[in-house]
Image 1 (cartoon, rainbow, N blue to C red):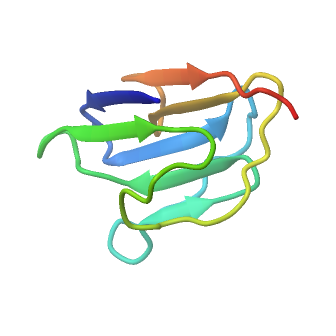
Image 2 (cartoon, one colour):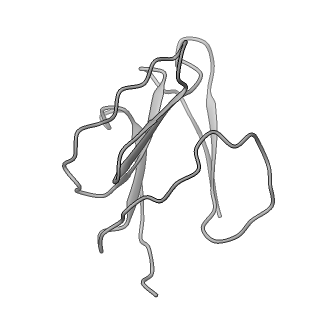
Length: 100
């Protein structure tokens, strides 16, 4: 498990297959808090001007710790996944994914 706290300047974070190059899905912070495609999930979070975002990363089966906002499958290549702000210029964490 990895835990970090970070400002998200755009108010949108993403989880994406590293190096996927797919378009980032649209998200509307008022109408739809989450947007997704086959290789990227974006979610509205606290804007950096308002406060910090706490991120817990856990792979595998874990305890239910929050509200389910997305349920689906993310296609991930050999490069693993990255969690970042929507542009990735302010913070980006990369995590390897072990194959089956």
